Amino acid sequence: MVIKHDPPPRYEELLPEGGEIDFWRWRDEQENEESTPPLAESIGRPCIQVAECFVGGDVQGLVEGCRALGINAESRMAAGQDLFGWVEQVQRTSRAGGWLYIGAGHRRDIERKWMDDVPLDLPEDFDRVILKAFSPTPSLVFLVGTFILRAESALGLDDQLRTNRYLRLEKRGRMTAYVSATHRKIEEVRLERSRVVESASAWVAQSFAGTFARDFGLAALPGIEFLTTTLTEPLRDSHMSGLARMNHYTHILSIDRNFDSWESAETPGWRFAQPWHASDVSWTMVAACRLSEVDADEPSMPKPHPNEIHRLAETFDGFVIRWAASCLLVQYEGSLGALRDQLASAQTQRRALDVLDATHTTLTTVSFDASLVATELQQWASDDFRWRDESIEPITADGWRQGGEEKYPPLLQILAENVVDRSRWILDLEPRIRDQLVSRTSILAISTDLRLQRIVLTVSLVALVVACISLVIS
Image (cartoon, rainbow, N blue to C red; front, side, top):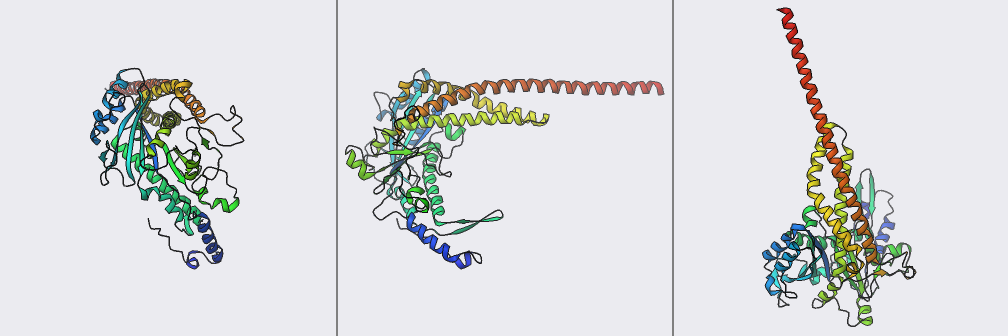
């Protein structure tokens, strides 16, 4: 891909009088130089994973989506069970369904490289997608989509970092913000990352009517973004400080520190963490490695190559499911919290009637699914063997923290405690909201009845007075 640099601005016209023209010209040159990766460096993004969930009867969206895509379940039997039989088992029994490989597909305009791939209308950023389903509880099914990026999109972040940016002035209310080259690169990298994740999420949402996209309207599904470098070791503490660190490309990518990063014995050389920039996609984790380090330490570890990347993604499948389960509870927690706030905000009687009507409608939709999901996920997370089964077990990558397991527990344990705590909160709040709704509805009904009785009594008194006056006159 050809790098198209932004044209340098005319600083004399851009900056106000006395605006330190030489300083900003020098700063733009310095920030572009420090934030551009060396020629020997290559920032790759071979694939991303996103996870959608299906609660209860929503799993029919998965079945209908597979049929619409032309995925023939009979040709993709896993352990003697096809997709439709697997879904029927999940729906009609009280057992979890485990893992099921659904199938894979490639973009229609490229040659098929895998025998069982089907042609799909994938977004232009992706060459291939691998679909797997997992049912950890009787009422929950998760779909994991591993999207392999085409060569141009895989180098999209590298291209953004190598593109020269320059000072831009933005009017924000009464003040003028000076957006430097580094801050502009941070924004462009964020947009590129979110664009690809949202593109994959939109395809999943359109193909399979799942709970995240349909009920909560998530533009970016929870998942993992895989990054590779050839020169710098990602998610390690940088020896730089001050502006040199702030302008470095690893800082822009949020991979310049090992604080709150994790590593696992099952994935040597790989570390992962949440991007710490406030503007980054909140439910997308970053897994990063230096390719030469992976190859040297563990020759059997798959390289991020299209023919091998599915093996790498399979290693993270179990973890991304648990990450998505935590996200699901956060969505239900937010919905119930909004209902609680709506009930508390009702001031006037007319406002109260509108709020109660809206709350009743929302509660009818959310309440059953929220309590069902919270109950089953709490049971799953409380069973240590089931929760840790078929998943990597990340531990903190901070060397000084690794000795204190009680204070800094493994990431799976943190997620389990988070799931249990949120489930308890939901199961405690949901009946309270329901009781409050019933009580307020009863009180308003009584109040409305008394108001009508008062009106009737007033009208009767007026009629009696009119009748008495008529008798006196006559």
